[in-house]
Picture (cartoon, rainbow, N blue to C red):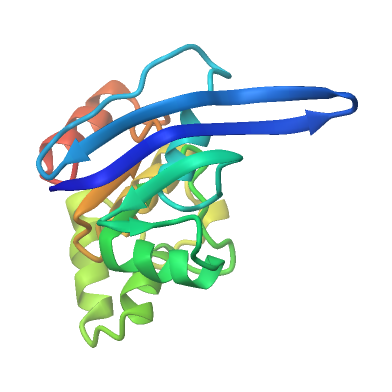
Length: 186
């Protein structure tokens, strides 16, 4: 069974009298255990496609099914609940909450699920990405690479069945990127 099915998905924006077509009738499916890479030049719609597949946005036409559930008829809250249940997302621009520490940022999805071991699980994940000494640091106190690692740890907090990663090691130096990839997280 496909865990993700994209059918004839299009996304366009209006810009004055012009219509900018970001995606045009994209179709594919992903089975459990598949590893899929979306490659293309900057500005080609990769981030837009990932966001649509994860239900962060809705397409202009076509459909996305995530774990057998069509995303189009769902409200934002329903899509968020589906993501929290099944999906991890590593954002290219981190999306960390600036008023929360590294530990608290990783705890958020765990607490939303009502997990009693949220702090322990978050500490373990941050240790796996080499940030065990930065638990109390706020995003502004962390380097770009450290913020990226917090984002990676947060993406794995709820043991997702599907991970969307938008350039997950793009802000890491080569050695740290390799360590994170080898850490069993990515």
